[in-house]
Structures are given as C-alpha cells and as structure tokens.
Image 1: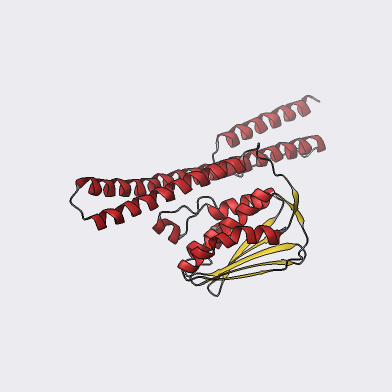
Image 2 (image 1 turned 45 degrees about the horizontal axis):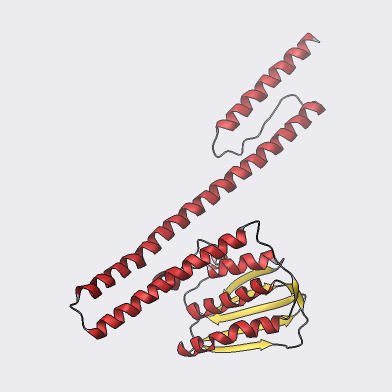
Length: 282
C-alpha cells in the first residue's frame, strides 16, 4: 500500500513537471506521458492531452491571425502613404503656378482619381467591419437572382465599353426565387463586376444556372492571375498586381466571400487556360 502511494505520488510529480515544461514551450506538440497505465490515470492523461491540443491549436491560430494582421497593417501603411504622397506632390505643382492650364487640369484629374480610390478603400473597410460585426443581421426574403443581377450589372455597361470588354450574360428569367438578403446579394454582383473591370482582358461572362443549387458563375480572361495565388484570392490581405499598380486594395472578393458565407452559400475560384472563374452556390 505504502509502495503504491509512493508510485502514485512520484507519477503525479512527473505529470506536474511535464505540464510546466509544456506550458513554457512556445511551439510544441508535446503531450503528457506516464508509466502508470491504470485506467483512471490513462483517462486523466487523455483528457489533459485533449486540453493541451486545443490550447496549442488556439495559440497557433492566434499567432497566424496576428501575423496576417501585421501584414495587413504593413500593406495599408505603404499603400495609403503612396497615393497621399503623390497627391501632395501634384498639389504642390499646382500651387507653384509654373505649369500650363492643360497640365493643371490633368493633375487635378489625377488627384481626384487618387482621392476617389482612397475614399473607396475607406468605405470598403467600413463595409468589412460591418459584415464582420456580430450586430450585422442578414434579412432573408424571396429574391429573384435574375432581377438582382440585371439591376446591378446594367449600370456598369458603359464602363465595360470604355475598356473594350465584351459582356455576356446568360440568366433564365424563370429561375426560382430563393431566400437571400437583397443588400448583400446586390453587393456580391457589384463586386464581381468591379473585379472583372479591373482584371478582365477582353471579356466578362456571367451565368446563373439551376443545378444542385442556384449557381452564379462569373468568368473573365486575365494574364494577371495564376494557379499559385488562386487559393489566396479571397484573403483580406491579398492584393493582385493590377490592384497594387493602380493603388487599389483587393478587398472586393473578400467582401463577396463574407457575404456568401453569411447567407449560407459556398464560393470557389479557379484559373485555367487564361480564364479566371468564380462559382457561388446558394
């Protein structure tokens, strides 16, 4: 009896030592082990190990999110500073008075464009904070995706014409209505169109088909996307080359993903034979 108590006490000390070691380690998958194979001890160790694994997983996820946040702040700091510095330079040239009226008008247009880009970005981040808030409520109602799509794509036809991008829309008017949030669904189509206006080389196609779900398929040809980045296309910190060169922030598709998920939908993207495709399933 005394010997058994001694063994148990020794085993408990060993477990305490292991727990302290694991707690002090940063990135470790180490778990508790014991020479005592009795049912009660084994069950206790298994439960403690489950807690350790959950804690380790949470710490890794927190570290990952922290790194993404730092990356985002770094990108924002750089990309806000660049247009602001540019605006300051053009304003100084305009104030200098040594440029022609033609140049002055050109610089004012450039400044306005950069201000619009910054305004759009601030509004996009406001949208993100709104959609990520627990207070944001989806209001479901029977919606015709045909009507929502047409309503939000037609206003951009002139923009597509100016960029010589052909638009092809295929939607059956008789597609059944489904329960969706109108504001969120409208934003999804607007962002898909704006993404195409930025990335498309010569065409943009949108189709809505009834399969195992109601599927929205948006396609455009592009040389600025590749298979290596396709998995990051919906990340908030992702920014395609065209966005960065234009001073824009690649937030549109992240917002699309958030709104699709909020409405219990699924979204996927792929790139094949120079064609970028987004598929949304409701």
